[in-house]
Length: 171
Picture 1 (cartoon, rainbow, N blue to C red):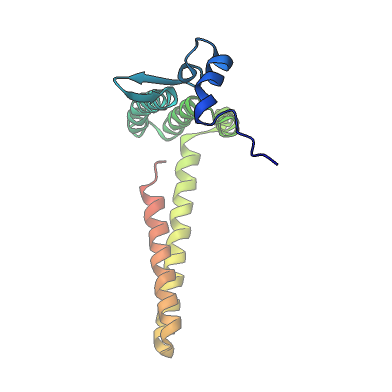
Picture 2 (tube, rainbow, N blue to C red):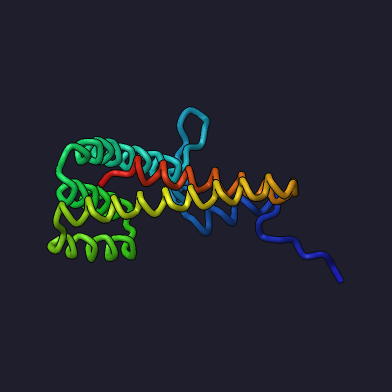
């Protein structure tokens, strides 16, 4: 049985390509561009453009969230939600967009006193958790079990981080 040559092997390749593509350059059809001997793929340019557009949208939105902190609690929360909605629209995240729009619609029921009260309660709970973890650490140190001491120290540190996060978070 004789070995059959593929149509794309060296001798018949150019002839077959000219039959297949005609006078059209194949590189143009697949989205490649030849400039000064170098091939530049259009996808590369389109991805660069997409990144530039995303950065240009993200920069004003970052400034918008910074200006939201100076507002009253409910207005600041609404401002942050609006900025997140704009980001979700820009990125095309439909599920996140739907959830954010529902949260924005529920802002009708928001009042500043309620937000401040919820924050105060959260801080009190976090402080109680710190106190409880500190007593657990003292008990573990009294028992002398090194494993329980390290675990209690980790738990106490975690509770302190949670308190700091609540304290730093905007209203």
